[in-house]
Length: 446
Image 1 (cartoon, rainbow, N blue to C red):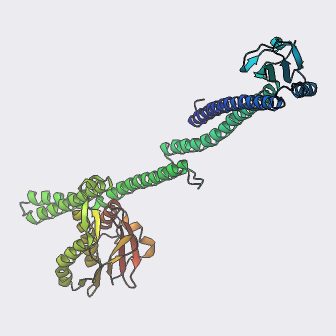
Image 2: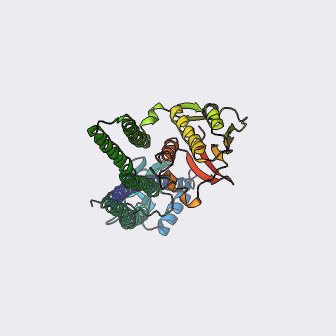
């Protein structure tokens, strides 16, 4: 009884039963009224047929007709009576009847019948004689009893079906809810790989389960990211902190010997700046992943952003003996909903990565194309590329292909790119440029 599916099934079952009872009672009332109307029509028709046998100054045909009908019908079923103007019986199958012109209902005793159902009668004057024609309610009562019995059995069957079907449906739904509950219990216990089973029938529980599974995937990724970031921070910051400590120690030793420590102070300041830059980048990524910047979203022309980045960094690439160009685009305005500053940061990171990690004479190309439901923006180069087995790993925070950490950088550039792309509901793909690398971003159209 505490189960919500069972309560819902029971509630709907009760509503259905009440609706069925109301419908049945209305139908029974309509049927009863129609039977009564049909009975009155039958009595009037019979009365008219019998009365039509009378002609002026000829009573014999009328008496014969009443006698014939009386002989064919039992008084318990149909009543016929003909009285002369003095009230003497001329023909019929009953002895007496009250004379009230029109249609009325009389008990059997008033017609001289010991037992029987009430009788619907019509009385009138035919040539000064009193004619009474009636029909018992026995047939109508029998039909009503059959209808009531059928209705009662139908009610019993429907109630049983509703209870049984409701229970089965409730148990089926409850099992699915139990699986969701069990999954969440295991997730809360630390099993972040557990997922809610989906039947694939597309019902509301499947839709909710799919969204919960997406949330669990997201949660699992965030937790794993936190674990990975914690380990990487401990690993990556250990070296600069050790260098900083060593620099301070050398400075102290020089001070003891009254030597100049200016160069060591500059080194310490640079090391602190690199450490601060790493923490600022991590904080920025966390803020972006939390969705805090969505409040600043507005309509942005993606082509304008890419054009600005290409203009700014073309001279930087040229100074590095590389070529940066923007592929032609004639698709008109490419408007998306986003943060212009973050989108600029995204393309800046990709271009700086290509300039930093590619050799001289490398061609770097920014391009934008229209697809069916999205815009495809890409930054490609003809450099060394990234091994296929490491293309997903480079999005991890502080992950670097240069394991020795001899090249500049902190391993957060592509992590920031991924965070900004996710914030804009864009998909990032690392593709082989043959040679080199192509970073493709698929932005949904507004």
